[in-house]
Structure formats: C-alpha cells, structure tokens
Image 1 (cartoon, rainbow, N blue to C red):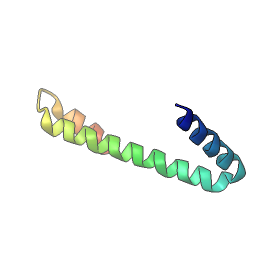
Image 2 (cartoon, helix red, strand yellow; image 1 turned 90 degrees about the vertical axis):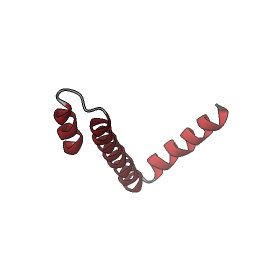
Image 3 (cartoon, rainbow, N blue to C red; image 1 turned 120 degrees about the vertical axis):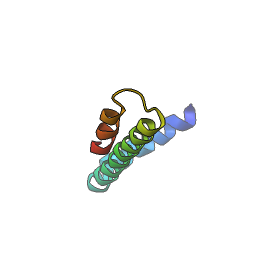
Image 4 (cartoon, one colour; image 1 turned 60 degrees about the vertical axis):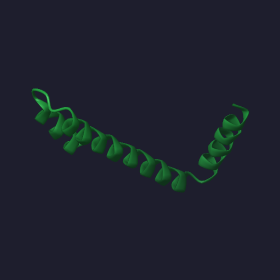
Length: 63
C-alpha cells in the first residue's frame, strides 16, 4: 500500500507540474476505458442471447 501511495503522490505532482500533458493522458485513459466497456457489452450481448439481447448489442455499439 505504501508503494501505491507513493505512486499517487508522484502522479499528483506530475499532474500539477504539467497540466496539459496530464490532461491529455487522462483523456486517452478515459477514452480507452469507454472503448473497452463498449466492446465488453457487445461481447456480452452475443454471448447471452436472451429476450431483447439486441438492445444490449445496440447500447454496446453506441458506447
């Protein structure tokens, strides 16, 4: 836990020191998170074809 705390402190200092590049990096991380979530929903929709599974597929594609 101490190592995680040290990493967070270093990342916080880096964020304050270089706001433009850190915001760009955070934007990329969030975009990748949304992309992975959408792909997971599409895979889930194809794997669990129950009633109204098409709506899950559509929501996964829209994500």
